[in-house]
Length: 417
Length: 210
Image (cartoon, rainbow over all chains, first blue to last red; front, side, top):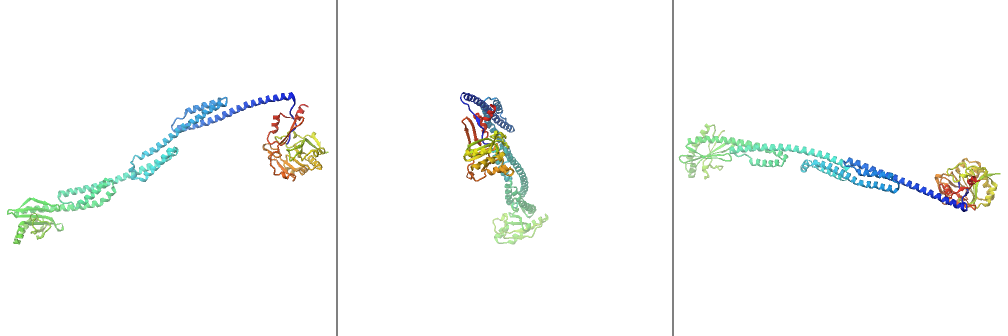
């Protein structure tokens, strides 16, 4: 285990030389054979390595082609053909240089895949971006200000989700679809909410407008009635102002303001209507009463000056009459206490007497006889004249013929009806 | 007369133990390690028997620093080797080293009386079979499983010496015969050197051309 036997190694002279020569030849042949074997083994290793590499590239080509097909793009058929040619040349190569040249083709094919990879990536990004923009387009169905008005939070959320999906579409298309779907869901919910709220508000606005129009028409009719009856419409200016405000609110689509103002306005119109009706009733009554007086005046020696008839805005009525001897007689019908009609008579004869300071009772007695005649007539028409009252200091409304006098005789009578 | 089957001897080997040593390679090994570098000494061959007393006298006369027993398997003839060492020691107090394919634990537990006597005579022991797959460049050993035991304090100073190969001792004799001594540090050394130098064992040549 720790030593060799003795060896007999060398001989001298010619034998040793021949042996050495033979040994050299043998070694040379052995070296040549080994070199040939080494080259053959090296060629096989290079061939196997090149084929393995070409196979790797082929797998990449196939994988990219599948991916391209999925994306709707054509694969790189030229690359596949070149690769097959390269593999055939590798198999048939007789030296390593030929193997290397063929392997170089496989490398070129692999480098060329960069272009296909780029096209696939670009296409996938474009598709992802189109999907995102399709979702975004749904939002444009309704103007942004409208959407913000009815669902501001939803509008902002949709924009944020779309921005996120856009960012992914540009960088990681595979992750973009999930974001786009999330955004699409948010968009659907947002639009549903906007449409529902808008419909609700439109219905409310319509109801408010119709209610406002009804009030407006009622008031217009009252105004027409008042105009026709030549009487003032109570609180007309106040109601007009409120109607104007409400019309503004209607134009602005502010149903809440309209509906809030309606009860009070309706109440005002109701009260105006009731008051107007009272006015009209009294005007009719006064006309009938005045007509009765007009009928009676000729019997008292007066002829009616029909052109002197005046109906004031407050519903008061005036009329003058004259006698053949030049006396002027005036009648004024106006509101009295307790919704009764007050009849005021006056004559300039009375004025002259008062101005002269003589015969006051005599002129009054003449006027009184006229009033009595008129009262009798009106009574026969169904009116109930009241007691005659003298009013020297009536400063309310001077009769048309006494306009220049500070004091004049007057009579007040109350009628029934 | 006690005899020992001896394959070869060398009076001055410097690569099989410390210093310059007389080496006795015994003939015959019952272990048969694969890829043994000295397969020619595995068969037992009593035709190689030598008188222990004469051999001991030769060793005592020519050895320099010590005696190394290799082979073959020294512990296969442990009784005769122990007698040889004892006979040498009667003349000179030489350092004695031995190789064995057995482990020292096996020898101590299951050894024969002769093997116990031999163990008692040794200063150094390299034990364990040669394992080709663990071959390494180690001090006086062929494979990493083999251990160097310092059985006495004679070589205590060498315990911590570097565990590096002692190398090979190659000799070309005047008759142009070649031999090498030592433990090859690499596998296939013998085949390599025989092919390289076109060496042929002298015994085989003699057998082929008697």
